[in-house]
Image 1 (cartoon, rainbow, N blue to C red):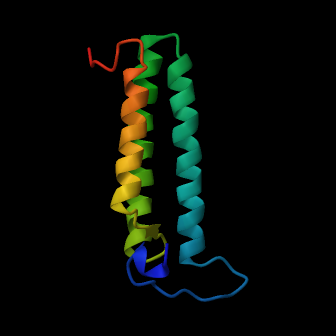
Image 2 (spheres, rainbow, N blue to C red):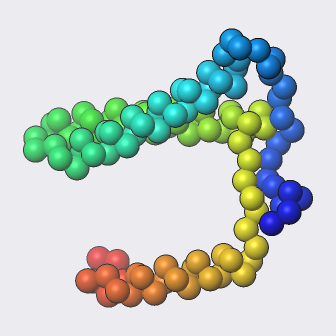
Length: 111
């Protein structure tokens, strides 16, 4: 895919020095939040006490929201970009996952 298929905002320039800049700090925080949401998800799956699960669920949601806000800020500043997918690629992925869905024990039916 060519560079013209990038989805991005204009990049906010930061100083290129050995010291951490705003982009470095945000990237570090985003990486930490991603790690924390993964850890909370695992802990919630293994929680044996309902009150503990509920407390962790609240913290997980706060962490997830923080992660999303950091991501949105980095995207707004042009420090995150994406390759636009072609319609054919989207259609193929949809078909593949629709096939997977029919293989589920419930036959893909939501209960």
